[in-house]
Image 1 (cartoon, rainbow over the protein chains, first blue to last red):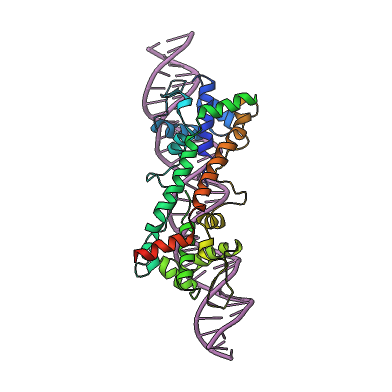
Image 2 (tube, helix red, strand yellow):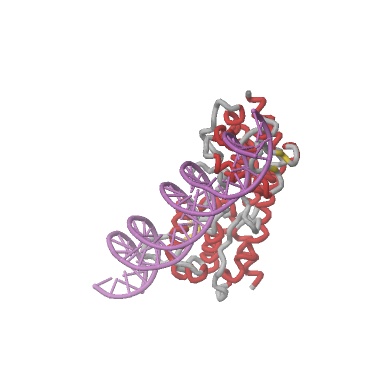
Length: 139
Length: 139
DNA sequence: TTGATTGTAACTATAACAGTTACATTACGG
DNA sequence: CCGTAATGTAACTGTTATAGTTACAATCAA
């Protein structure tokens, strides 16, 4: 399961955009209905990914790129993917004396990478601006 | 992250096939290099999904369908997907007084379902027999 | 009937996620 | 230039999922 960090991150980016950057983590937390530290932790991941910029003591969060140039994949990659960028865990240390144990990891590599790529390419088709557009049109 | 239950389940199905069903959970555990109860737990999920059949006291596990008719998606669905069949967690209980809080879940629904479908369709393209074929060809 | 096997409960350990309190650091506004 | 407010992060708690382990009742084959 992909955690709610992903959808919360999109929520954060939408709010920054709607408020032209003039918003605090406390206010965002009020909209998400959680604690401000939860918001700041996810903002920290978005900062490391180069999507936003913020500074201690200063109210306001800057979008480094417009939301039309940030895809759902960018957000997913920033907050969900582990260091190795691999979605599927494959069990290691299998018994090399066994034909299956010796070769299973390699046999799975390509199909699992393909599936991950399809997921990511689908996410990349939608920008956060598309999501904000849907939100605004709902009223 | 998708857990190793998935890759272990494929390992189990491959071993059943390679040994024509004459194999115990203890032997499978020896190939996977884990405890037999871990294997039986995953076997229980595969049984509930109707992919295998086994009985207490009887050595041997039956493949209900040939591996060529079991896709990676079938295995993934059997051991990884939660009750609601939804891959992405979306945060709930957002603030309805806020435009974004009021509409974010609905705005995310379709793109996230699309991405999940792409992942699943990609997994469905490969059968467990394909994996076993790769394994055997490696030697 | 004996021995092997399955199925499952129960316990432990670890890790990720999420919520919370606390606080040092920073910088803007009066 | 001081006080207020905000960020960034550490530290702790609670919950859940995964994984490993021991134990054992139920089952069946030989």
